[in-house]
Amino acid sequence: DWIVSYHLTQADADAGMPSLPDMYQNIILSDETIWVRVEDIVTGCYDLVTLTLRVNQLPSPTVIAPVEECDDSDGVAFDGFGLFDLTDASISGAIINGEAFVGLSFHETMEAAELGTPVIADPANYITISRTIYVRATDTDPATTTACFRVVPLELIVNPNPVIVDPLPDLTACDDGSGSALFDLTDANSSVLGSSQDPLDFILTYHESLMDAQDGLMPVADPLNYLVSASPTTIFVRLEDAVTGCATVSSFSLVIAPLPGFTPPPAILEACDSAGVDVGTDDDGITSFDLTSLDDLITAGDTSLSVSYYESQSDLDDDLPIVDPSSYINTGASPQTIFILITSSDAGMCSAQTTVDLIVNPLPVIAEPLPVAVACDEDNDGFGLFDLDMYAMDLLSTLVNIDLRFYETLSNAQVDDGTGQLDISIPYNNISGMTQLYVVAED
Image 1 (cartoon, helix red, strand yellow):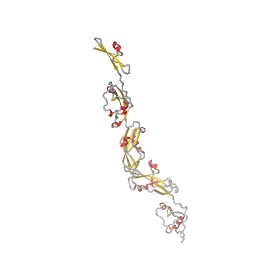
Image 2 (cartoon, one colour):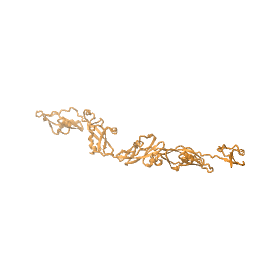
Image 3 (cartoon, one colour):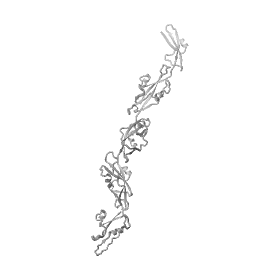
Image 4 (cartoon, one colour):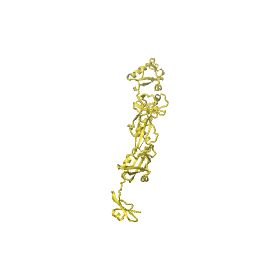
């Protein structure tokens, strides 16, 4: 039977005292030599040997910043899981930080890391939620046998992808008359962002191909003015988190809506100046127009079309039509442009626009009162033959482009439809007792 004891010096070992405790902390940083005494407990004979104590340094792995991946990195978005390649140099290389003879293993708990098992089986394709895992850095120097190790935490963060609620509504623009249409793609921004995502937190771009959208390449340069010539055209949208870079891609269609077919109205709608309570005097350039007289011409009998009239383009844009287009009082400007909107009741049709200019023509100016027409009473009976043709020629001697028509009654003259109109090519006999006639002057 033997007694084994440990001593700092040979003298202590020879004397058998003082001895070192079984759990001894070295006092020399480099190799430290102590003495071992092996003694026969019966005879007291002993022998001495030396023992070199060598402390191998632990690996010094670096605690790196959290590693982030996007929710869809595992191929499935919005499930809270991400795919991490723990063997990537940006992770493993950063943890080792150039230290030689260090091997890494990855563990889901500190206990597993301390024990060295179980390990994460496939660290190159580790799918997980956000969590902290533990990295065991082990000394692999073949010159040593201690396999010393140190454990450091590694935080893994799965960042959410932006949310786009599919399907996105299509955008529709009206045909510009050439089969093309100009779209403002930013009209889709609110649908893409939804009500809960702040535009300042995201980068929103539009792309012509799915691959460009996924890679964040070749965004549409001018989304405010995007010309499309084929309908429907698919456009792809990329919504990227401005901080994490995580992105979601979706798509919608650009639809060119056709214009209704209609007959353009004449460029000018004319009316004569008139007098009245609503239109003022007959020389102020203001009168009443029946704009609806253009309806049948414009629609050509197409009952699916309706026509509305506006005083300005801004009124048309704001849907403020003229309330009573059948008795529209012009503003006094001549010409005055009226804006016309032609709308179809057929689904998917755009509205068409055109214009007409209102012109108020002045009334002919003839000095009043008119001169008295005189005829000879050849038989002294109070009646005579009046040469109205000559009378008209005298009136028109200083006027141009004026026609005169003569009537016996005011009512016929006001209607001026030919009823009761006198034929001035023959002498007029006032045998009916007429003492005055009514003259209509027309430019």
